[in-house]
Length: 171
Ligand SMILES: [Zn+2]
Image 1 (cartoon, rainbow, N blue to C red):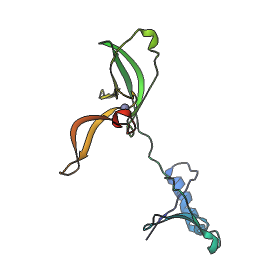
Image 2 (image 1 turned 90 degrees about the vertical axis):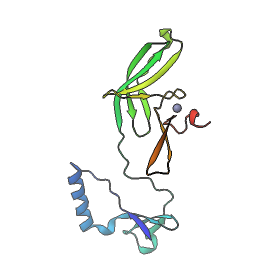
Image 3 (image 1 turned 180 degrees about the vertical axis):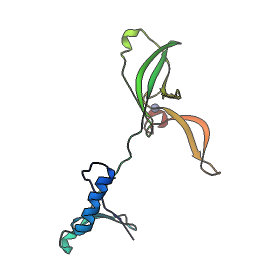
Image 4 (image 1 turned 30 degrees about the vertical axis):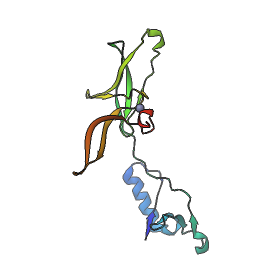
């Protein structure tokens, strides 16, 4: 069994226009295209170029890069850090929902005479708060889930950092 992928990158006014361009190519130039093929059993990858002579048509492919990538889902909001039992610093920030990473406008706290960081959190535009990891200060915490015996995932209430490479997750 083989998996076969045919990929296009083409200019177009809009999605429909771009696909119509492709439909044109498919009806007139189907033999001028290159196909990416994977042997399902061995996972071996090849490109097949039908424009080449048969002996030259199949080439091994080292690595397949995913062609279509999901668009990033950035949530707008604010980043709040609370210092010394109540001093809040709030800046604009964005949360990447996929990775849990928060990118905040940086503030120079050195001049502000603050000593102890109590907590940090991201607030989205609907007012939902997400705790920021106290170790890396860059990713939101999420509930650890485990493969439960029931259907789907169960949550055990423990909060872990979204960043799998965070020090807090490597202990
Ligand atoms: Zn972390």
